[in-house]
Image (cartoon, rainbow, N blue to C red; front, side, top):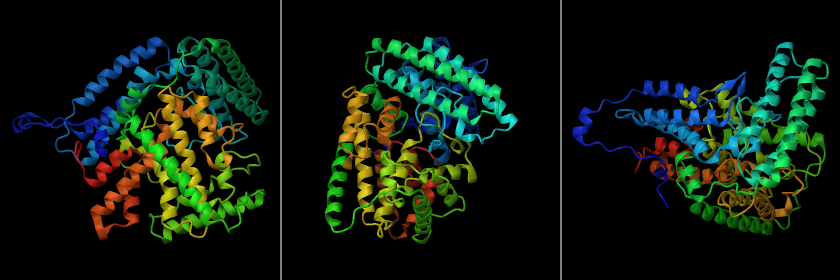
Length: 533
């Protein structure tokens, strides 16, 4: 298996004579390029509608080559490690757009790319997967709407019919599973717009705009259904492309084949550990789900308080004032039965999933304690951040269990291993779909069959949503456990490096201070390993 830092592109090694003739580039020039790059990668717009036509995408692809050339010309002699890391962040983003043009082509292959209406906030720095620019984040609106906000929403909705009409010309791909799941997603957007209509009944102009958007969504869905029988091709990117994406975009030090081995091992480990925990807890009463809204609210708040106290009193990290409110805000409405997979876990012991809710602490930190570096201050593009965001949130579950967080919740340990098993199973689904060895339906059924206690329901939304996301976004389904493994390796190596000086608080504070960048880059900063070591 390759060295962890080998996922990073290598720099040229200069002879002493060459070094005397090279003029090092200025870091400020990289920041200028970053600003220009971010402007460039946005699609051109026509009357406020993003242009994903074949001509526009060909123009963008040609322009990308010039940005890659400019980045490759940088000489980082004399730069700090953090500054060199920033260059690799920028390179990963450019590689992400390059991969979109060469392989994914979501504007041409994936009907769900044109979904733009979302009711729920993503727990990621930027919404997962690929969507057309100009998403309408309805969770950001407070109802009843003020006059300015209503006008803003009306203008955003006005783009939907035009974008969906453009999509009919753009979508020339033959990816069967992406096409079929796109139809399903369009139904969800239509239902969401119907829900919106009930929230804005007092504004006739806005109601009319919502109706037009929904009618356009339904017409587009009907067109997809008519075209579906002709879509018979594979949807995965293939193993070779998957390997390139892991190495050059997500900066992950494993191949497709290595990740298959790792995920199979994680699935077996989780199922074994669960069986042993169940045997140990045989004399304890089972964890009954919460079936009362008031009890759910009470226990959720108590779980947040217990988690915050553990983080503070055990010296896990430096607790900030914004952390508890960020977690409390995620209580959500009471979910009656039948419940989705993660509710099956949370409603048996709300304490367990609060560890994974580190996502919301990450987002609160971005708002209240933004990174001083402009390149790391906002969300990275093309989901480059997932090994860090999903890896750390997932890692916190088991790491906190081992640190003693669940000592008073013995059956909670069972829930941890159920979570790991489900994530390993869906990761294998991701890998097999992209190798075109499983269809999306086969991947979903494999994941359901390998999730303990039958909590991942065929008639639920979770399994289909997740496998659809992973088919659209290579490497996302594996990032939870692969990122977790990278972080565990980094923690182990940092502890070995520091010996008796190691503390968990210092490690977590330093790790999180690096920002939401790939774990391989954080490793470079923390351990001082240069590229290519």
